[in-house]
Figure 1 (cartoon, rainbow, N blue to C red):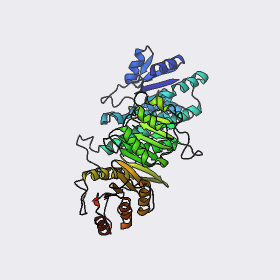
Figure 2 (cartoon, rainbow, N blue to C red; figure 1 turned 30 degrees about the vertical axis):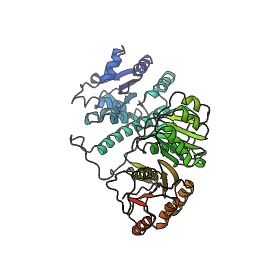
Figure 3 (spheres, rainbow, N blue to C red; figure 1 turned 90 degrees about the vertical axis):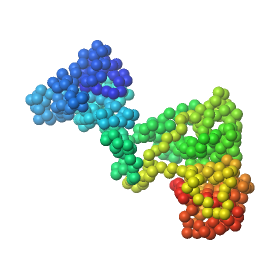
Figure 4 (tube, rainbow, N blue to C red; figure 1 turned 135 degrees about the horizontal axis):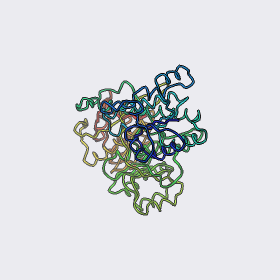
Length: 506
């Protein structure tokens, strides 16, 4: 039996090769892997000796040779293949151990591997006769099979082949992403911002966690990663394993809390929508205000903080039934307090990243869009009413606008003094969204700000904000009835801001 080894991830490679040698497997290798095996005292044949050709073209051509690919690809059950092997003196290769440089970590033209993916694909295609290993986690299974049977089982070879094709697919996808993100990288010119989405989309996701269940207990759920993810770095300090909805809601909370600016902020999420949002002078006050927005809906919710949790906040939290709390850290003693609620899931992780595109499944395909970036540019915003907002109203308008962009449409958000006091979410008409927000505010919106994620098609939506006591409103504008809505605002003495940008969320 003969094995070819050439790996970037050298985890356990010497121990693995040593055991292969003990099992009577001949070792062939190249580059750094060959040097490492030789330094360990293992008898290893260099690929250059195996093929009769040295590495050339600056190491671009090393394994691209019939004595490599012929030995891997030959169908040992085909007499013509066997005859060709004998005619051209090509020894068979029965096991290929190759993994590839993670291109996305430091992309460049010279790191586009050719020989490695070619060998992996060659071996995976011929998995009826050849084993291919691209992940050190599979080393023990390979050694166990060889030790027990002198060869790899059909089942194992097929599983390894599937893993191998997934490995090369992910590698190629990372190269395509590099071209899409930096279209002029090869020329050395500054990249040009894309004006449209790419003609093809190559998504490679790796399963990182099996969840307790899906959206409902009878559904199977898992979390996959497309690359660097704050969820891969998350530490679960206590509580049961996360379910699909735990992750979905916690992600919504985590993204929202980090979109609220630099001040201490707290968010309470229920069914992917915020039922409490606040900023404050300190994180303890921010959480208290966020919880007070809608304490009924906060029951069984998700809490997210953009500051480390102090003991005082932990003591407040344990008195409220909460499914998940997520923060960037915990001050000394806070985790011990939270431990009193053994079913509470407690996580910390780094801030979330920004995805280049957003993807949703539809029948037989995908809907793809660029992310909804919420801008805060008072210069480009216009004030069509007689009165402009005061500085305090501006601050509340900005917070209301940030929150409205992350609430399911149609939505109306009422904010007063840095606290969301009423959130009407997911309604089929804007008037009902406003009524829900006003009902939840229960008089606390007087002198505060109102945000609508899309324009008011009729003045009745604005009338609800007026009745709730709001004195400033932000909306995109653009309705054929804008003049009617502006007049209603002027009648009530409201300051109205047109952002010129809609923020639907479905």
